[in-house]
Amino acid sequence: MPKGKISLQAPNDCQEKQTLSITQRSLPPEVPWVSTTNFHSLPTPAPSPQLFPPISAEGYPPPPPDEEFCRTVRMGFQNMDNLQRQKLLAELLNSCNTEQLVFVSNFISPRLKRDFLKDLPIELSLHILSFINDPKTLSRASSVSKFWRSLLNDEFTWKNLCVRHHFRRRSSIAPVLPPSPTFESPASKCSKFSYKDHFRRRYIVESNWKHGGRTLVTHISPDSGVVTSLQMCQNYIVVGMDNKKIHIFDVSDGHYIKTLTGHEGGVWALQYIDEVLVSGGCDREVRVWDIITAECKYVLHGHTSTVRSLKMKDKTIAVSGSRDATLRVWNIEEGRLLHLLAGHQASVRCMEIYDDVVVSGSYDCTARVWNIVTGECLHILQGHYSQIYSIAFDGDKIVTGSLDSTARVWSRQTGFCLGVLQGHTSLVGQLQLHGSILVTGGSDGAIRIWDLETNRCVQNIAAHDNSVTCLQFDEKRIVSGGNDGHIKLWDIETGEFIREMTTSGNAVWRLAFQETKAVVLLQREGKTVMEVLDFDALETQN
Image 1 (cartoon, rainbow, N blue to C red):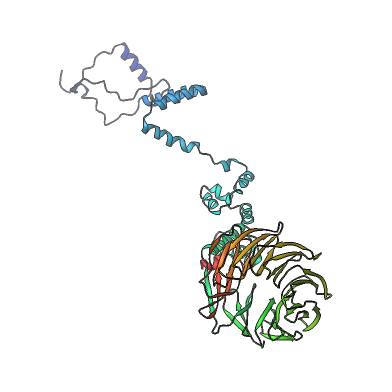
Image 2 (tube, helix red, strand yellow; image 1 turned 45 degrees about the vertical axis):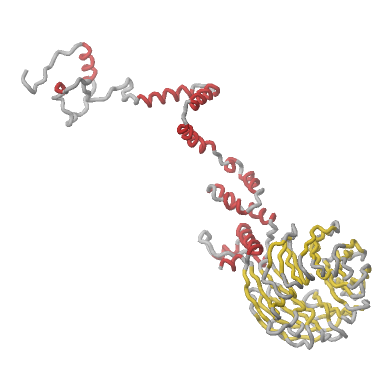
């Protein structure tokens, strides 16, 4: 047979049938790179080459054997009931090695996770989140998913958190945060109150109280004058001294504004409301000042000894108490005397005012309740065995602190003694009353927290090594100063010591604080020092 030619033999019956079935379909185009001239020259036996893959009955190429097996197993598994499926899975898992089991575990774990908050109604989801008290937990939860973040942006959650942490909304510290690009305009940002932003700011402020803050300014007096009185309000810090001077500072940054001069003796009592300030001292005078102009509007004469205590009802009425054993009610708008309240037998050491009622404590061991409109003495509170040095009054309850080492609780309406608070071992010279909570400080260095609903001491704090000279508390903390020169911060709930507020000195004269600032006056190295401490979130960030 000539070389290069292919012998063609007659096809058998099977070949004829196959050829017939192929020729009945339209043939595909010729594949140019497949040669059909050298099949018989292969060196080893091999199956006859085919130009096309096998065709299934449906007209598609058959699946690979492994895919066919998987499909068969899957269809069989789907036809089983639940028990049969579990048995099959158990058999398969028992046949797996460690690597395969790890693969199964990693494959199954994500499919078993469910977002339970997303599956619940939004009201239930928010109710669940309301049980979380820790803001750090909420912050981490907001990073779980976009849905969780949207839930935690709901004002209801943050409002509840503000209530639990006693972060009340107050206009004096309304949060004004830097403008954010997500808001339409700075004006809309400032006008819209956000409980989330409010909570964030207050939380930072509380953290600064506990762990840091900063000293805003320090003023050192060139002389060694003793600080006798201090008031810190929204606009000013006013300091009265025994060197006849009244110093005024800006509460926002602590910078010095002016000094009021005119008293001829030490200033022992003062109070201001808005821009009206009233002061009294060793010169037996009561002076009315305009803080803006530093002008002394009136000099009120009448007392025959040192004015030791003074309170203002409003910008029109003030009451002064003196070592001459009298109180005087003044119209400070017109500069005239309204009433002379006589009855005490010794120096009037302290007083408090609420509406038209003033209560006074005296070295004659009694306290008296007066109506400042009529000048009438309503009650005489008798029971102490020694001089009264401190008094607190909230309009309903009166509390007096005495040298006899006790504090007594009285009813304003009846004048009856409601309870005797015993526990201090020396003079009870410091009192503050808020609601049913009373905090007392004594010359024994102790601070006691009382529940006036039961007249029981709930916390006894060994605060200072010497007399407690000043204290103030709010719903979260107590700040105290003592003759040992230390200023300390305490947790009012537990009575635990938190930290020292500033560098200690020789003695602490006075202190006062607001929510974001505190001022302390103390003697340090023979000088009178005033420090203004700042805990504000925005100021700290700046």
